[in-house]
Image 1 (cartoon, protein in one colour):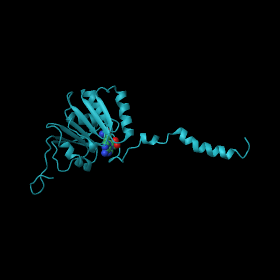
Image 2 (image 1 turned 135 degrees about the vertical axis):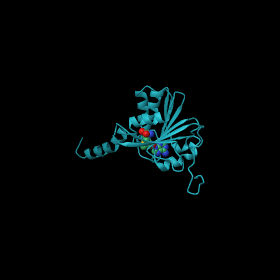
Image 3 (image 1 turned 90 degrees about the horizontal axis):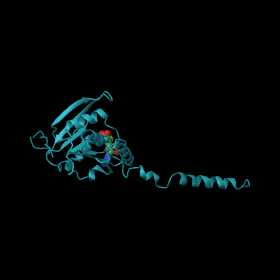
Image 4 (image 1 turned 60 degrees about the horizontal axis):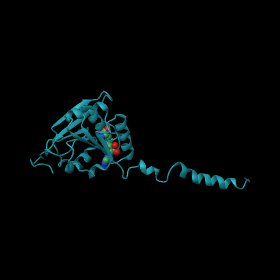
Length: 202
Ligand SMILES: C[S@@+](CC[C@H](N)C(=O)[O-])C[C@H]1O[C@@H](n2cnc3c(N)ncnc32)[C@H](O)[C@@H]1O
């Protein structure tokens, strides 16, 4: 090759190399379709166990974890109680991690994880719902949670649901991080808190 050809070859290689190493839409596999409403922070394992204990999960229950991260809540519920469990996350990377977690723990018969926006879900099949979101997101979920069967349990890690009275609120210090975690339990039908004038909050 003569010395005038090298620059052409080099530029050509630079143009072609990225196309060879990464398909044009490879990022689409791991990027959410829209920005998640809250970032990923996993619930420590000891807190997961406490949440499931608080919800009194049993084999016949159907658990939904809304924003499931690496799937640790549904995976633990299936392993420990043998119940059916579903996880939903908007972030494909989290869905991938959840599916690996399901495989590593051999609970594929019981646990399903889907890439979905939790605000589009019909929750009528669930009777246990777990949350680790934000207070505003918990409130935004109320219309969906109100459609749960009577006697369903909702447990939230760290955040309350303004306007809805919890049946139980506990502080739990996790051995994983030595931090105190607040856990809330609500059972359906949800109980509206009274405002200052004594009427139920909207
Ligand atoms: C704080 S993490 C909790 C993860 C898991 N539930 C746990 O307790 O370990 C919140 C998760 O919600 C997901 N998320 C945020 N907005 C969402 C939405 N609109 N629909 C579905 N998932 C969402 C995030 O991607 C993240 O994985």
